[in-house]
Image (cartoon, rainbow, N blue to C red):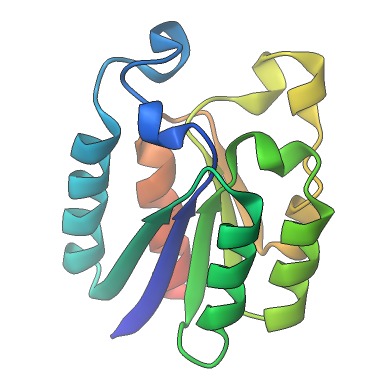
Length: 142
């Protein structure tokens, strides 16, 4: 059974409340419950962690070293400027998939660039919560 860490960055606890035209009305808790069900169906043991603090997410990536088989991350706004997250992902050498519920390329220009994608195995974006399923499936099949 693969052990996967699912990391969610700043403001992703507010999904269902903020930017409903982008993220919809389903709550973060409801989406996380669905992701846990998908992980079980895919035969993965999933740990979900959300933080609004960059350092907390870096610490979680570091603590995954030697313990997790994969990381799925929706870093939120940190995607576009956090070299600390990029370096943490690169350092632990755990297969990582970057995910986004929204199509970051159809949004504001500053969201079009990801500083973490170069150290990830792949990126899934634009499919709502299904981006998480696709990311999980990819990690489980690696």
